[in-house]
Image (cartoon, rainbow, N blue to C red; front, side, top):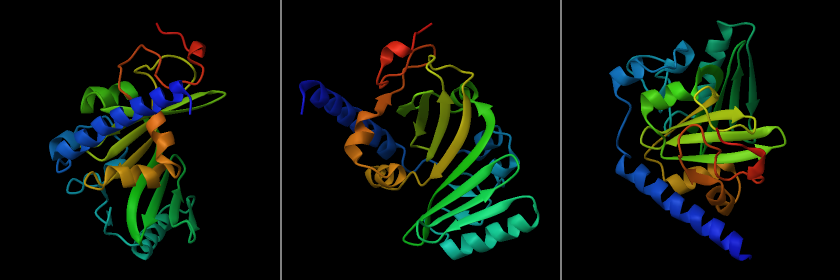
Length: 229
């Protein structure tokens, strides 16, 4: 392994250790009811009910408790009230996807228990999220030929916000197009292994500390493609 690769991995492991520490320090913290009611996310399908904030959703979906069959039954009830929506079920991979007109919801199960919930809905920008929840602890970055995906982590709440951007600096106007709810008390190492589905060394290499807005994110394969303000 090259020296630069070793340096990158060491950096990733150090950041990841800080990430785990932050998650441990706040592992028992839940989103305050009033804070969640005032969140910039104003989509009712995401807000659920007053008595159920992330990582719970709509009271019937409890991460770590709801079974695959229980969730399927409830999603089918939801679908009956929205005939234009459809459900995709993967028995083998243990996914249930509810595709609606303006959003989609993905439920992932492990050992027949709800593991995480993904909401795909372009309802808020990253600036509003940071203004409400504060600066994230870390972010994970991945890229393709069109730009990069930035996933900002709030381990104390069990939420990941995902934004897609071209090769411009990180900005407040980046649209958050995916929300992920998971159990903040779940072992973070195990969660990331299951969530990303590939070797954790690669996760470490794509994990960095939040640097704020107006700067190019660390971790781009070709950083010269991005020019800071």
